[in-house]
Length: 406
Image 1 (tube, rainbow, N blue to C red):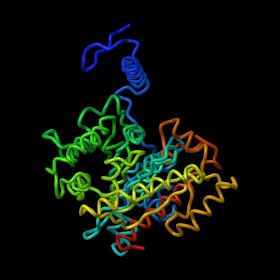
Image 2 (cartoon, helix red, strand yellow):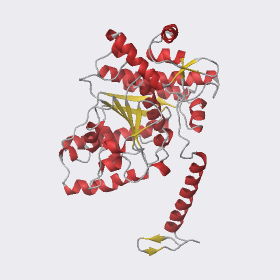
Image 3 (cartoon, helix red, strand yellow):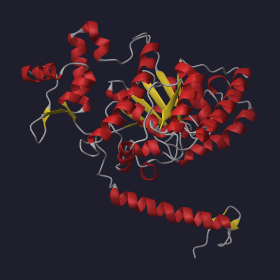
Image 4 (cartoon, rainbow, N blue to C red):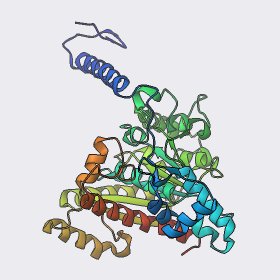
């Protein structure tokens, strides 16, 4: 049996510490081997093409108008599928948006909705500390939805599990090294680096990511000592560090989507402080609602303390999003109705359904927006995508409202 060394010398191989260290090492090696086998360095994740009808729907014109533009040689010229149908990349969709905006200036913001001068970059934090509430799934689908609308989106993974990172095509164990997460941006020593240095492009046009991995936990370890030292004030104060970093890249993005960790940590507080909008996903089950109540209670106490110490928090909007909802389950329907009666318009009208479409997509390391036709049943897919799009559209409208658009 391999001997394991601790800080104070070799450990008893039968001790809990030695067993945990050994099991961690064995599992890490196996995971790396599996990833290298299934995801070799040359095999990068790619986004599918979009059909003419999908593109027409995305940019807000009729399929006939899009077809005529192609025949007239206007705008980006599509490729042809094996069935000789016109297909477009997302980059071409965005090129088409710019072409239409230039052609019809009076409708420019409808075709190309990116923020204009005077519009504030929107920072949307997805937060709750109940596992299984679809927090990461919400952040992932919202990020991709906003990119599909033509916005420039930055996703930030603050969760040590790094599921958002992996879903966006970055392998945390193999491809994210030390100091390559937000921890490298927020840390308190001389190894701190600019946010721009840890941002990575993804395969999804218009969507970049700051990846996550286990080193994120170090920020919560180091912050108490930083608070006691009284060395970090103003924009360097522990709660303001992420907001300060985001200002350095605001010329590059329209929206930032933050996947907060599943606990009320210093990282979560940084996300909440930096945010202009807060989305709290919750499953319509009593145990989940009770957990969310504890989250709200604890967050309220923390916000009170932050305001007392000169760091008040406010948001342009706060919304509760019902996730994994089963519309024919009577207890769930009753709990959803209770939340709507208590919180009113703060609850997103559309609920995201519990569906095999999202589950099956996740098994392929994909989202609903990446699935090819036929990957799941047509009716199942349509119900799922309609619910996700409806929820994301409501959040998107909140963003447009902040920018003074209807």
